[in-house]
Length: 113
Image 1: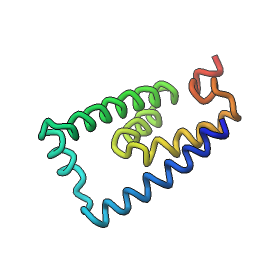
Image 2: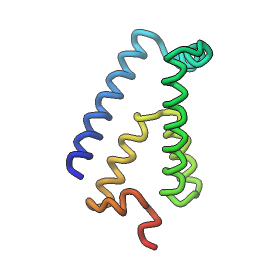
Image 3: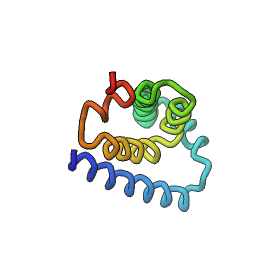
């Protein structure tokens, strides 16, 4: 669990740093860049669609893990829109909250059942 926490910390710092650099060099209009990549139907499209599917699967897990309430749907929305910028800290917080128990980390509110 310690290795996971370290990886999540490093990943969080890295994704925020890359996001700041991309924003400074290419601007904040990421939807236009993403849509252009998707519509090109090339390797970037393949990667982006793969990544979007991953984000939707992650959002589904987050919704289920949180118990499908308003907070769960809000977290799922953030995990899709923000990607790792939300998901890495979310999983890191969940790992700390689980007390090192993988079952509690993966199952969330369902771990009590």
